[in-house]
Image (cartoon, rainbow, N blue to C red; front, side, top):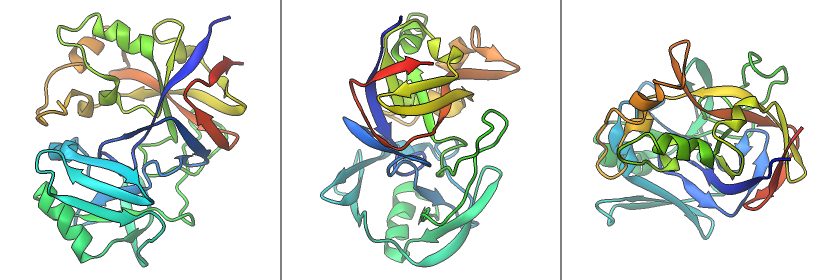
Length: 267
């Protein structure tokens, strides 16, 4: 029996901004607590990502003392703090991929801060608990509410999948460029491709929606420049129906805490 162990847990509070590594996190229906519950939108309330706005890579995010803290990585004097327990009341309809859903919009001072950092007119929004945005039934028969994530609550990648890729690259990359929620050690490269139902600790998950990768994986986090890798190399051995696949999406059937060191049992 293969020994799989959680080695990293990550949340991305604001879609397409930097992530936060945690020792443990609370599993909820929409994903990990705080994961992609915030999003930056343009003047038409359409979601913004690093695909077009590569400078988003420079805004670091952390949670401290009950606050969501933003800081520009180059100009560290540019800092913004938001209380985690206080939300705006202005309702707004936002678009993320093919979905339109309700959010609440922050005020002028906060929106001006992001506009200044990204040099583009934009706004920060939050997804309240009452909002419904459902996962597709194409890969999982059970539908779940999901945050502003691309489509599913969790993304799982094995360390050996990255090690295998890096063995083919001239310049190795980090797992951060793939933005997974859950990273595990053990097994062989891409073992996660064969998983259907797993248990992490005492919580049950379904796995099985391959993650198609985009140009965000090619953005250098140090300078925001796009390159050819890792997509050029991945396209040679992970191209399925013109989609470059790396990692697996998942949904949870139980809610609670998982932590680094928890075992993954493939069922």
